[in-house]
Image 1: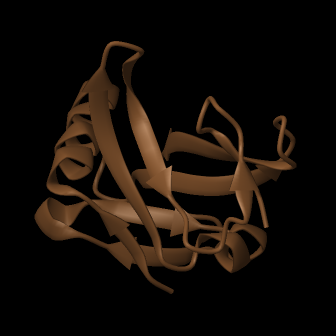
Image 2: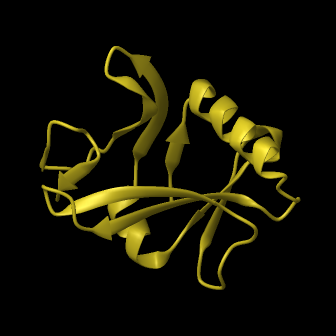
Length: 110
């Protein structure tokens, strides 16, 4: 499975891990959940350890990303960035498999 995190996103995840007081097993869970105005929505959480069926992706500086099997089918090739603009700060997703989305950028259609 391929997921890209920009340098800006990696730095923000590292900051969240540091603030959380995360141990070596901790990482960022990237998930796709049913919901949102377009059918699916992204969900990000810091977790202490992966679940048994998770794919574990390793990035620079020891950052780990956990993806469950359901989410993996919708996240192949996704690029995650962290952006700051007039609308606020937050993670932004570029998903090549998405066929549509909403104005808020947090939900999508496949």
